[in-house]
Structures are given as structure tokens and as C-alpha cells.
Length: 414
Image (cartoon, rainbow, N blue to C red; front, side, top):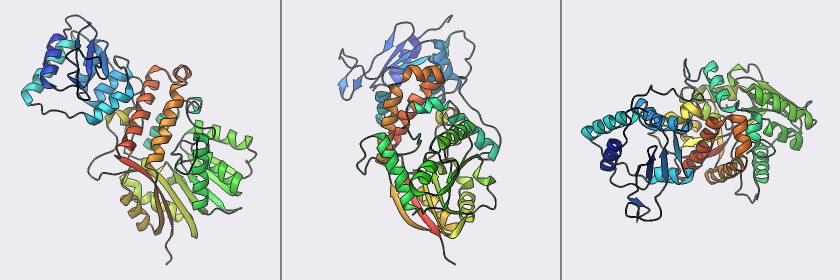
């Protein structure tokens, strides 16, 4: 780009970040070296430069100037203007990085230096995969758009890293499972047993995905099951898999919002990986809706991600725009409060944070083994989003920023 100069930006970054466990390489062949990597000096000729960020063009800096912070960096990465040599090390670095206090004058100098590094360039557009939702948060129309943005990449894309049952939620390795397939079977069976399913009972799966739970419950326990999803491609594949399993007379999958179910009664309800999309504003209505569909002898199992902090949000700007728009997990205590307000009694709570870490590790491994096909299906930008997202998700379970819980509840008597 004309008049783009990296020297002022390198100088200001070096001054503002005197302790750096990473290296930044610029498009003009210059670099800002690491000062330390896990206690090993990096600027004095040591072999390990730490994670390497390669700024491929002034457009990367322009993205950050336009949207300072996480969103701008995310846009530059998704667009391929910012490259990293090791995603896992970068995520670990972010965890351990202690951001220095930067005064207003230093920030102003950084901003000016960044603008000089951009040169004469038209501000780049956000990558195509970025979603900006409009309308009231967690309205039915907006929730449908958010879910479809996440899931409608392609059924085949998810097949590249999920197990054969296409279960897109936490598997349970901690009971002795050796493979992802075994661990997902164990989870599905655990839910059925906790719900004490009996042959002939009516069961609802809220957020059924590709039908793994309803297929398992009907095949193994003889129930009649209804699954709902907001993704038409999910429903299409789920119905095909149900037919292939010979269960079309026992299992139905609908494209529907849970708020659209009226006058239906079930013996048991499973909500697996759904509650984190409901939102604080709707959590009480969600719990009440589930209660209204259960008889007095009904059972509910709610399985979902919950915050382990009370004073921070879950998703940053990048995740909200590219991965899980309007994702809104609440604390376990808030979920239980909503259930109590709706007339439920909590019978059992179990945590599976380590299991989700192991599940995500397996998904990461399988996706990385299929990168060529994944890029053909999803495109370069979307694949970059998913490789970063899966690792970031694994990390927040490792650091216990969030965890995942199964809450078993029954209607209160009287």
C-alpha cells in the first residue's frame, strides 16, 4: 500500500509492550521479536520466538484500526490478513498475558502509528461470514437467524468431526469410554436412564440437532419421541437418519421454536445444549413452557453450559459475530431458580466440564484430519473461524470460565 510504514508501529508496540512472549512479523520483512517465552529470552537470539503473528498486509492493521480489540483482530485473522503459526500456543499466550497499563498518550501514539502503517488504503470490509443481527434479542425470528448462521454451514461439514451419531454436545468419557462414539453413546444413555424412560412414553427433545437423542431413546427404550430444531438442513438429515433406522413410526422431527409448542403433553423432556441459547431475558418463560408440557409425573433433564462467574459475559464480539450469535449462557444458580419459579423440584445436578474439554479435543483432532475437505465445503474464512472457535471453547473449559451441567428435575407436588 502507498506510504505504508511499519517502523513507527513497531517502535510504539515495543515501548507499550516491554514484555512480549510472542513475535510479530510484518509484510515488509521486518519483525518485532519476543522478549521472553516462558521465561526464556526471545530478543537476544534464543531459538524459541514464541507464537508468531504474521501481519500479511496493511489491511490487517486497518481492520484493527476500524474495530480496535478482539473484533478487529478476529476480522484480520478470518480474512487471512493476520496469520498465526500455532493456534493452541496463541490461546495459551492470551490466557497468561498480563496486559500492561497503557496511558492515554501512549494509546494515541499507537493509533497514529497504526494509521501510518495502513498507508493510503480504503478501509477493508468485514469478512462475508460476519453476522450482524437486527431486531429484539432472543425474539423468535432473531433466534432462528442466529441458529441457522451457526448450523447451516453444511451437514457434511459437521460429519467431518462429530461421531457417527452426529451428537453435537458434550460426550461423557469419564465413565470409561475410549472413543468419541462410545462417549456419546454413554451420554445419550445416561440421559435416558436419568429420565427413567419407559416403553411407549412420549418424549420431547428441545433442540434435537441431527436427531441423535430421539433416535437413541426410541431405539433403546421404545419411546415415542418428538425433536425440534430451528435449522431446516438439520431436520432434513435427522428425518433421513430416522427413516434409515426404521424408526419413522416412533420419531418425529419438526422445524419449530419451543415457544410454538401449544397444548402438547409429554412424559419426559430432554433439553441438551439448548439452554445456552435461551438468554437471561427468556430463561423463566423457557422453564415455565417446559413445565406446562409435563404431567405431574413428568421428568425434565436440562443439559447445558453455564457461567462460573457472576460479573462477566460469556461471548466476546468475535464469537457473537462469527460463531454463536446471541449465545447467552447463565449461571447454574439462575437455571435452577428459573426451574423453581416454574414449579420444578431439582433432584440431581452433575457437572461434566472435563468431559467437554475431552470432547472438544476429539472434535479438533478430527477436523484437523479433514482440513482439505472442510475448506472445500465451508471455504477458507469459515474454516478459520471454526478452527479458532473449537480451540477457544476448549480453553474456557480448561480454565473453568464455564462448565456444563445436567440438571434433573420433576414437577413440584401441590
